[in-house]
Length: 247
Image (cartoon, rainbow, N blue to C red; front, side, top):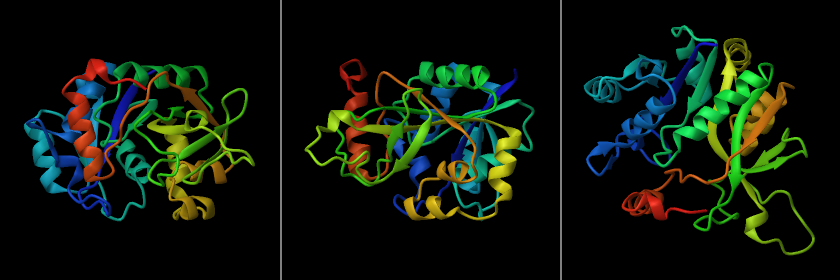
């Protein structure tokens, strides 16, 4: 099965403008993510999808594929869906450009699950790390069934309980997804954010609202997304000694 990885990169992020190009020890963050992806698939199968000429120039400088997309895309998945029309691949993997600590083996695991479950959307998850607080609304929390089917995902503390629960019992989304082109077509064709997606501001919930099955892949270790300047400082600290980065 032919596979391509698409990294959606929007320059005008509401929470962190210019985030894809933020420098991390001499290299733009989106390029760091692309380098990780290039260990999971051939480099020529890694694409950065963006609406920014500035990002395109940087991507080309590092010899990665770049696809210019509309500035009107509602989400990263909408951007990936648009870009996928220009890519010859059966499986499209969406890796978020703000995850510079991802393990390429986790990307390969998501790909393997998509091959095993071709009629399901695939998304990754793991336990919250010791650096993370379940009250943080930047972190989507995940509720899964016994066989790892998505039950729900929320920025709230789910699942809830009458008694006090340790944060080690909470699970979070890791932003690696895999779909086929038809699934992306259905997502894009919907033309707006679904009701639950809009409330939670979690794009995968559009698939959920469309009635498509989502199989969740459990990863052993957490990553650290960069949503804020505070996150960036933590990522830089962790990168100084990656071997000591533990969940």
